[in-house]
Image (tube, rainbow, N blue to C red; front, side):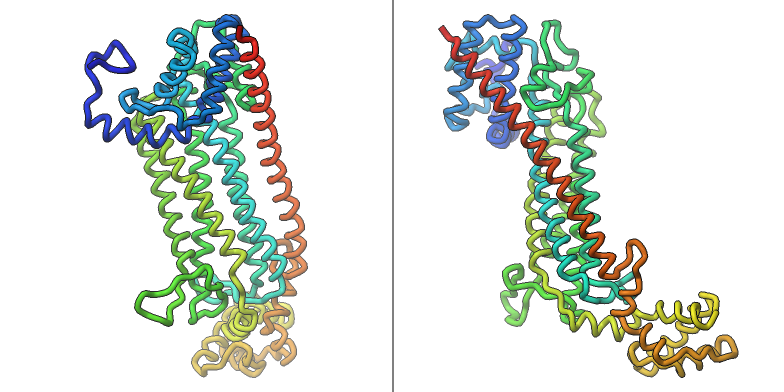
Length: 502
């Protein structure tokens, strides 16, 4: 038996190649690519007819056949791994409907290489828009939580040690800012892929007088890839987007780690409803943060997928290759799917987590996170250098820890004893000043400089974040409207061409 796709090959494909290479690839790709292949075939046909490379009779017959295939759907296409891949199986069905001669003419002035590159960009474009929607939903949840909890004081941490008081809303506002940058990176990736490779052929274009710009317009692209070799060789738009998705995964993983720690009984700052938890098979008291562990694990998965994709391509020649175009993109598609699912879970976490204001306030009052304000007061009211103030307060904290005195029970007398030891003189801060410095709510409210945690500052930032998110989501909607309009035009024009069938 000879090859089903080429007279150059005299032998049938080996069973092992069919079973382990072509069949898995065909099953994986045909479902995802069928709609894109249909659009590409219709746009290419319209272009061939418009430039006079395809007579009207043949063009109309092919248009009718393509419409029939679209209406019947992918299940009507018998898949045969001996035809290697999705395109040849699609073409075989088209030839069954339109006839061998007409069906075989559609491949004029193109290659599987530029078809595959175009499918990759179209599929990636759709996934990127879906990811942006999911990121936007998570950012919206963070912003609304920031507004709701802008007054809920809690300790802020550095090095997992109590640092300075903040609010839970301030924390969520920071998360929203990070998500905004993640979205900006995805938008940059979208812009990078907004050029159509079709017409590049195998790598050197074609001598037929085609109109690549017309095809690009029907397929919703802003223009064409300028260099035919680059068009089939490059998938850097996917690596750029996968890098953005991986950075986003690191964002959600770090937040998940915070929530993971803060929700333990030892911290007791947050609580999750049962619907986002799991339990133990043996220990009946357990309420496990399963979703948080899943998110952290998926971040590692995305890092691995990005690494795998880049490692696949680094040894490929700068031209079309199977490993460079298929295996690298396979990692991207998996990463995009995992991102969409994980972002939905991350949004659920952001919406579901419940802070414990009393516990947060108690920790902030008693764990010395207000110590920096006490040092600032020594600078303002006692005229000390900040370094001397730092030494004095450090000595006070050391003394309080030795005596098991919590932060909110530090007195002016303790400060004077430390000052005498450090400087040889007392500083005479009033009890009211000490008390006010050690009050975490006053502490937070005083930090009104740009970027600070004062509720008034946070809410002002939230207003800007809402506007920025709305602008981004409007941009996503505009993308979708542009693509829908281009596809409507494509379908209208292909129906008009089919109607000219004799």
